[in-house]
Length: 576
Image 1 (cartoon, rainbow, N blue to C red):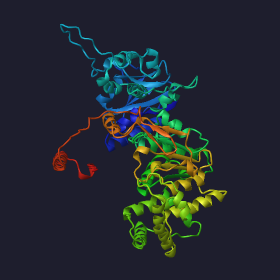
Image 2: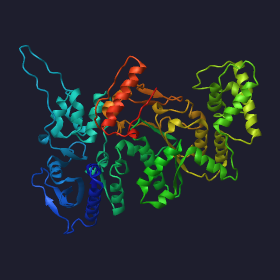
Image 3: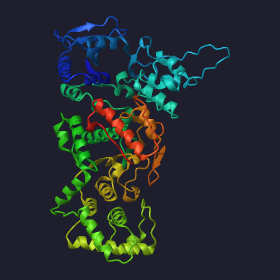
Image 4: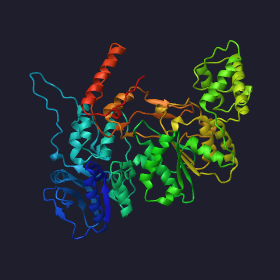
């Protein structure tokens, strides 16, 4: 008998108290070990439309709803007695007649909250606006996964009712309708012939087979972290795909890029039992977050964890450099600032600010490891807003030449020099320290870091995998990845399902960014067609006449939150 869990079960489990969760997990483990155990108190739900729904007693009040057949047992839901029964009475498990995917479908007659607009008769004839999908053929709607019982509601729904309707539909149908309504063209997952309804890509986002107690334990350990078990078909495709060169996945904040990066790193480690995999990002706090999530994903696979390392990219670079028997003395930003300030005082009538000089050093001279005047004269200064004549460049080079001499005199190196030295070494090494590298928050990777990554694994199939969003670039100026040997053209994909941001907030945030963003190499990230999987309140937008009025308004708002019990660390204030 196959033992499965549904995402609706983990969702409902996460809403229980800690003690209640422990009791449910104990019952679930016992059920997996021996579903026929006489101690299991199964009760058939007579009022349920789906006659395969049963309840299992956890304690006096808690009940697990399962779907039981001769060949399978599916954990569907858990709640207090009456609520659990009501959930089961409103649903049935069925195979979609068009897509072939297994779906938990809300029974249309039991849903009272969806209202179809009623047009009151008036003396003059009133013509109702056609629904958003009135012209879409039934066969097409069914191809998107819309249950047959819901076709009439889908045809009648207007823009105001779409979000409410989407809450009652299977995820693939809701996503397709939202994408269609925003001008997109939904993709239809087509499974191979003879595939089980539970093996359909859309079914695998909500149902998973639990092969042993360890896998079940991992699924139930962090029920609010659904990503450890359930992946969207678009995410799973990116995780498991073979690439003949560097690949990149993008998407707006909340579309699951980090989740794809984590699963990709684990997938590579599993597929290549002798390989070492590096999962990296640009800062140590983010690396710590990745470690925590990775531990949740593979905590029952210690041998896999031995070959999968998580480090901030500067940290792993310094460790690899020291492993050569050379201890680097890295210049701090303040030391470089001092050297720049001293060099600038030696030049008369220097008309560039200290801030400009530091930026030019960090983003051009040091980033590209420019060694002489000719190289500085000819370098492309992408992202630098101030244009420079050749004479100005020559003046600036006299400053930077002194800075370089000052660093050598003090025995100091920059972080960029570390990466450059490692990149040279990686090109000549037969056995690299890592066969694969997965990079999260890739939009903030800088020039020397990318040069190192390109030398580490850029020429190997599946060697480099990047997850990032050009719209979230904070720290780095744009530059050509292709020029450094990382060409993701043809291997770049955009995620369009947002799991973290409500539809209302995302729509407002999208107004602040262009619908399309492109990098220096011409790769385009198209943000159009992104849909959110949940609704929320509309954001309040307040326009005031002065800065003083804004301060007073924010202060009043903070006072309201404080009286409602919010703690200071739960409130974020962003100032532009």
